[in-house]
Each structure stands twice: as structure tokens, then as C-alpha cells.
Image 1 (tube, protein in one colour):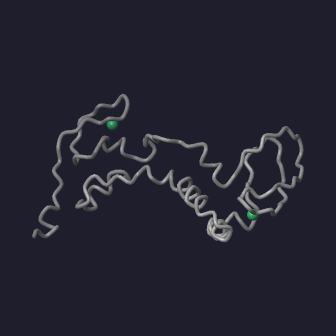
Image 2: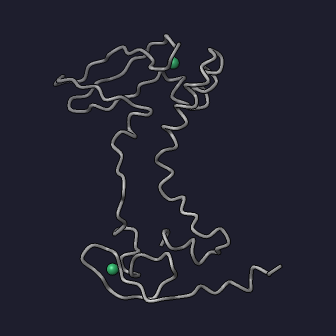
Length: 153
Ligand SMILES: [Zn+2]
Ligand SMILES: [Zn+2]
């Protein structure tokens, strides 16, 4: 049995910054990839910019209206036959896909439970969570704040 405090020190070692074109040598803990400068958020390399995220709650509606029009759309939720009005703006193509009631995820889940479509709930959750997986780096579960800071800084 070891007190966690006894292994609090992070071993620093020479690392080479992996930021494209940098290659600077710095001292960092084993999971550090970038020099202090390139650890800043504005240099963060985003592995996945997912344009499709927008389609979880919204839909892309291609149109070529040149003035604002009001359209009636059907709620995209399985089993919901509500309709709702949407103002369509010129050159804007992203619009809500659920009726006002079902823009709330909790309500969508409730609705799907009522109609017995648990499979769709699972699917919805998978879609909703996929963009949060990116930073679940649990390299060392016994780590302390020193490592947790790595990606935040
Ligand atoms: Zn660097
Ligand atoms: Zn609805």
C-alpha cells in the first residue's frame, strides 16, 4: 500500500515538440507532445472537425430563396407528427429538424421510450456523444493534476 502522494513527482524528460515544423526540445512528462508554446489552445491541432455534428439537432436545408420565407416542416423524430414553422433565410442552410418540443434531448428520449424505440435512443446517444470522446485520454489512471493539465493548457 502506497500513499498516492509518494509518487506525485512527474518524471520530466527531454521531448521533441510534435507540432508540425517546430521540433523544439523541451522537458515534459511522458505524455507531453508539444512544447509550452504549442500547448496553448490556439495551436491545438483538432483531429476531427466534424461538420456532421450539426446534423444531430439540425438539418441542412438546401434552397435558393432570396428572401425570408416561412416554411412548415415535419419533426424528424420517429413517430412524431408535429409540424413546425421555420423561417428560411437566404443563404442560410442549417435549420432545426425537430419540433420545438423535441429540441430537448430529454423529451426526445421520453418520446422514443413511449413508442418503444429504445434502439433509436441508443443511436441518438452514440451520435450525441461521439464528439466528446476525443479527449478521454486516460493514459495513467493514477495520475494527478500535473498530467490533467497537459491538454487544457
Ligand atoms: Zn513547439
Ligand atoms: Zn416532435
